[in-house]
Image (cartoon, rainbow, N blue to C red):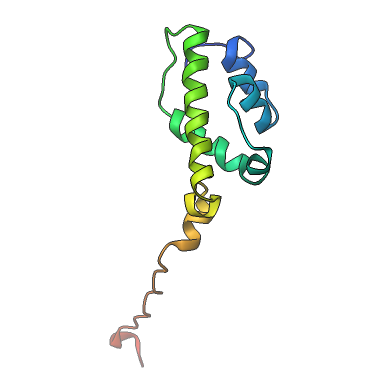
Length: 115
C-alpha cells in the first residue's frame, strides 16, 4: 500500500501492524466466512495487494482510505468465493504449475569440432 502516511497512524498503520488475515477483515469491516479465509488467507491478501498496487492515498482522509481498502478487500475475497486459489493462481508457483513446458533446446555440435 503506498501513500505518504507513516506506519502506525490511521488505518494503513493498523493494517501494517495486523498479523492475521482476520484482523484485516475486522479492521475494514468486511464480512467473511472463516472456513474460506482459513483456506485462502494468503491468496486473498496477495490479491488485495495486487489490486492496491500503484494506488496512492495521498491527500485522502482516513475514512476515504478505509473505504477504498475495504472495497478492495471485499473484491479480493469475492474472487475466492467464486473460485479456488488454484484457479486464481496469484502466486508464481501456481502460475508455473500450469505454464506450458518449453522443450529443452536440442544439442548442437558443429561438424568442425568433430575429429
